[in-house]
Length: 260
Image (cartoon, rainbow, N blue to C red; front, side):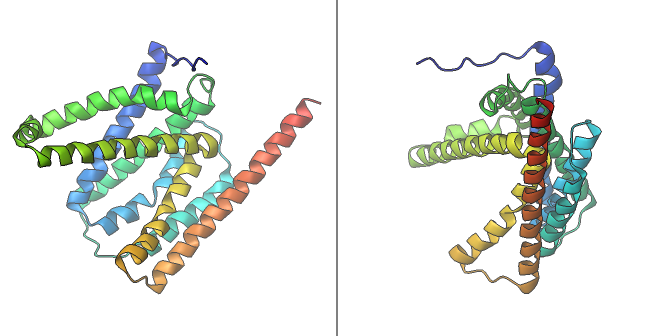
């Protein structure tokens, strides 16, 4: 059996859609990682919790379809994440700017991905094809950023490794690459099915899983305020799923009536 041929984008699609997606990925990763150097993890999580709200703004600015009722669960999820975030809050104005920069570019990324997979090019770009065509520009941009900030020092350091150290590094990088590929591919499938805002709302539920994992693995204690925050997050995600389900049902009924 023959497989499906890889779709080839036009120069306009590549330059106007795929390159901006790759740029958004690169900037969001670089900004969020740099923010962690200047701010505490708790503070970056608080700012990151507003990502679903920023995504709503980006989707509306791009003129993409959006159910305004979804603003309610988005606010609940963002508020619940802020409530549940505990830890020392180290404030830094540069860190705040970097966090919001990461939010804006991350929101732009998922909005453009949704547009590519559900808009006029939906028959051309599935999640696998989209990941393939954005990975190459991302690699070149990340390489340029690395050379500009670190030069050839990482290459020299790897060249000095021998034996077990080199094998361990290669194994670790390989595992990270496989994990990143699976994670990004799964995110694209979720974005195609739930949309840009939906994928960001569901992603915020990871805070609950992170804390539960910490309880099981490290025996960490959970405060009452954290439990309240988690309950609000889950309520917001549940409300989103119900509103989205009803919206899809109404759209299906409308299409059926139009074909009668």
